[in-house]
Image 1 (cartoon, rainbow, N blue to C red):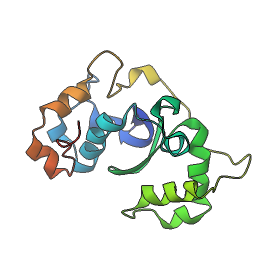
Image 2 (tube, rainbow, N blue to C red):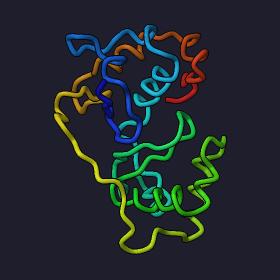
Image 3 (cartoon, helix red, strand yellow):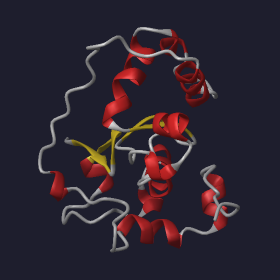
Image 4 (cartoon, one colour):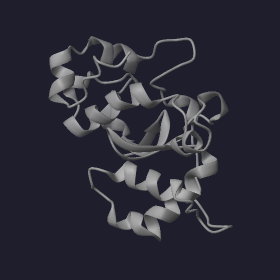
Length: 171
């Protein structure tokens, strides 16, 4: 079974679990809860700025768009390629290895970075291999509303609340 990233690298999904035989997104209510939570969250975080760029600039126009997501929904770290190595160093080699699964996972990384900590020069990130990137649907498009956007929009507030994903107070 192939694993795919959708919109952002990092969170991996079983392709057969998310897409039907024709490549269409399966109905969200048929997906396992964890998969559904991540897909719903992707609708809201795709196209957001890199967290590290935001810490550095505090101006979205100066930030790179996030390409990578680590952590759990609502406690995730969004990164651009430029800042992924710092996160990986924190997570693999520094105190981040103790933060896995903690409720303040993202905050702990942000605090570490804001304190001036960085990966050593030359610290390697992850080598990503994109195979058939155009064949995987993206949850947000510049012009078109995607299947995922439509599917999430069809969920009522109670369904989002049950997933812990109610964004009705966010405009």
